[in-house]
Length: 312
Image (cartoon, rainbow, N blue to C red; front, side, top):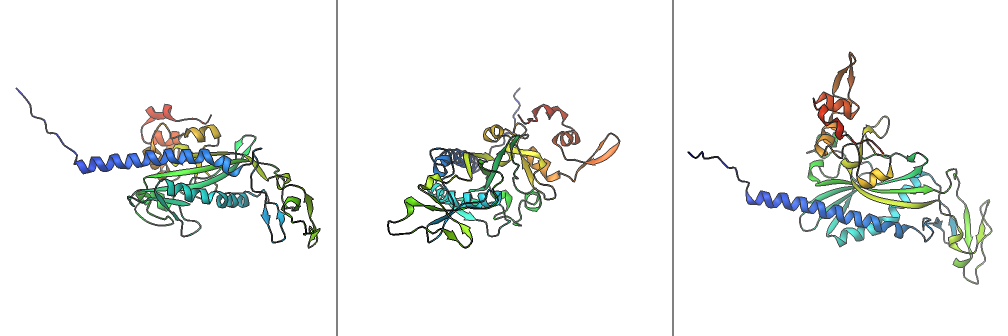
C-alpha cells in the first residue's frame, strides 16, 4: 500500500530571488573585507603614522590636529571618503549619504543593477586603551529598529537593507594629553623667494625641514569590516541613549565573534527589541531584562546558554 504525500514546491522565481539575495550579501561582505584590508596603506606613512599632519593655510603654515576623538573621527572619514566612492563604483553600487546628521546609516550602498539590493554601512572610529579599545556603538535599538517598515531617523526602512555592516577604524593616540594645536612652517614646502612667517597672531611658528618631521596625532591603524549583529554586545553602548554596544576586543571584532555570533541574527533582533522592556522574576523580584542570559531564561531556552560567546 502506497501513501501519497503532499509535496509543497517553492515557485522558481522565489528560489532564484532568495539565492540572488544571499549571493549579493556574500559578495558585498567579501568586497568590504578586501577594501578594509587596503585602507591602512592609504592612510599611513611607512612608519605607521597617520599621513594627515594637519591643516594648511595660504601661507603654507601647518596647523596640527587635536587628539579629540570627534575631530579625529570626522577628518578620518573625510580622508577615506574618496576611497569609499571609488570602492562603490568598482563593485557596481551607488552611495546615498544620510539626509540628516543623526540618521542611520552613514552610508547606504544601492546596487546599480537592482535597486532593491541595499546595504547599510556605518563608519566607526575608536582608539586603543590599555584594557582594549574605547567603546563605540552600533546604532539605535529604538524606533527604526523595532518598527522596521517605517522610515523614522533612517534613510530607508530597516527591513529594506539586506545587511547592516560596520566599517571600523582603530588607532593609537600619539599623545593622550594633546589639547592645543601647534603651527609649523615646513622648509620643503617653501619656495626659495619665500620668507617663513615667525608668528601667527601671538602664536609662535616652529620651523622644520620636512613635513614628515611633524608627529602625527594618531598612528598604528587597524581596519575591519563586520556584520553588526555578529559583533554586538548585550549591553547598551552609552548610558541614557538607546544604542547597542559592541565587543571591546580587536580580535573578536575582526573575527565577528560577538556574544550573539553563535546564536544567530534572529536572537540578536529579538533581544534588542525587548531590551529594558521585557521583565523576568528573579530571586523573588521583577526585573527588566538587560542580559542575554536572562533573556534566554525568559524565553525558556536555557539549553542555548552554552552558545553565548564570552569576550576573549
